[in-house]
Amino acid sequence: MKHAELVCINDYLKQYQKISSIYRVDDSVLRIIFEAGEPLFVDLGRGDSYMFFKEDFKQAKRYTAPFDVLLGKRFANAKIESMDVEEGNRIWRIGVLASSSYKAMRTTLQLEFTGRNTNAIILDENEVVLEAMRHIDSSISFRSVKVNEVLEKLPPKELKEKPFDLNVTLEEYLKGAYEKRLHVKIEEIKKQKIAQVEKKISKLTQAIDALENEAELMLKSDEAQKEATLVLAHLHTNTIKGYQEEVTLVDFEGNDVTISLPQAQTPQMAANLLFKKSKKLRQKALSVHRQKENLDEKRLFLERMVGVINAARDPEEIQILVPKQRKSKQKGDESNLYETFLLEGYRILLGKNEKGNIALLQEAKKNDIWLHVKDIPSSHVIICTEKQNVPESVLIFAAKLCVEFSLSQKGGYLVDYTKRKNVKPFDGANVAYEEYQTLKIYKE
Image 1 (cartoon, rainbow, N blue to C red):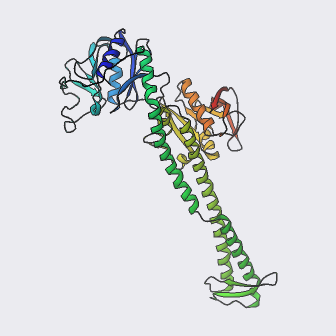
Image 2: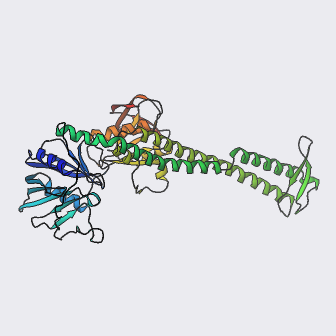
Image 3: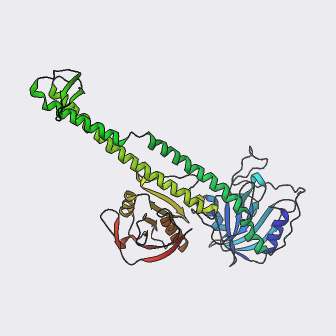
């Protein structure tokens, strides 16, 4: 951010006397509400830090690190005592007074827009670091940022910046700040995430292509069974000897058939080994069929994921669909049965196939929310409520996932939802349900 830009925003926010709420909504993004004003988002990402207004910023998880706990404790519902931008530095300081049951605490939130070391630092009255978004060691920067140490002031310097001309209202400017970066940012992240998904699709395709041919295995199984039956039929003729490697027999149509015999002490044992070979080939063919079916379902899910990523309208939604790191705590093969998404701290589970839908119905708690496209076969979706009221934004997002991963045709679809206790499964993933409500979701 430019220094002049910070000054302009600071002057605008001086109209407020209180911070109502403040918390982190992304790894480097803070959400601040000044009294009853519009939420202000502060992106402290390295290289392109800025502030913006946005109506529907999607938050994946709730942050509970020491920084976040202290941020809420010291700044939520706190009276603003000072707000200023340092001369010669891109540093914005907000001083507050927070009253607790014991005593009033004065605290400063120092937001540093300094490129590589951009940071949010919580300071006490003596400029001692209480917590920071990023702890910085002296080996990384000439100035360390460590808890319980006095924060060294940055010396002012001459800032070489292009003039900052505000030719619209500040509200319009802050709304446009996000949109200005949106196109480039979303295309970049779409390209990155789609490449990750397509790499997985390619691996699955290779695995499918590497599978043995199911039809050929079944044909070999039938041939082995016919040969075993033919050997049994010729036991009384004494034409087959023990340990014989090959024999020519007349089949049931009167044709000569040459059979390669397994190493066996007697013809009867040779026939048994051929029957065993036939059974193994048949089991292998059925196993290949199941493997192919499983891999095809995984590939279809990932192909739909590519479509959902392409349809996403903001980078936050894409990060929810394909997180940076997914820590799966699912047991056994459950991660292959359903996908887990996080929004505003709520877990949203999406069945990948019929087995996944059944697993969700079995595992969901009675007060979890169940969703399904109305009157159309679709994935089942579960919102894990933990006995909390689910925000409308989470319901809409879950319903959208239900539509996007189940249907390919554009249009408007109805999605029913109700508590899991109102859903009665039968015949696998088929259900009857009552006391439901309905959302309309448009697939573009």
